[in-house]
Length: 239
Image 1: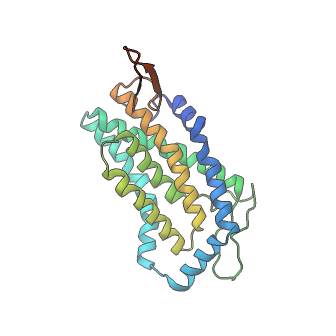
Image 2: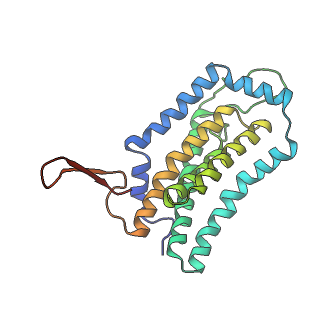
């Protein structure tokens, strides 16, 4: 039966190499754009002055902990209990994705040291970063990172189920809005968290799909070969 530590090395290689690495500079560039353009501060002011979802943002806060902490391990446990190899593979994919995401996120938070939003003093803290000084900093958002990595892993693992991304990505974005309303994160924290979650979850989910279903080779590789009659080319790949 699949476990969350199956072939971790190849999963990490696919996550932190090749085109997938583009997600990480995208995290930084999107934040720079949102900070320097005033989007972060403007969103903070809009929520402070005009939007108040007390019950909603507390629910979002709890869901950000409960979904990765309780719901996703259940997928693996149920898969094991029912001897469902495919379901156990899905659970393994999301557990590994969460572990890698949280570990990476912790390192990034410590390295950037972004100051949390402070509503009371009236000062713009959106540009305040203190690298290597805050163990648990604001950037990126853990709530959006973990819920996005779950969604990305399951989307790659079950590409035939359109409803997974249709529900999962809006749910992750809604948690980001809740965190913004709760004064727990800047808008760019949520965006960066979603990019991080996608960067980690998708390749891991894709790799577990290959392993569990016995798909050999690189899922995104293409083979271009001439047709037998020499009249054209054929393109094939494993998706």
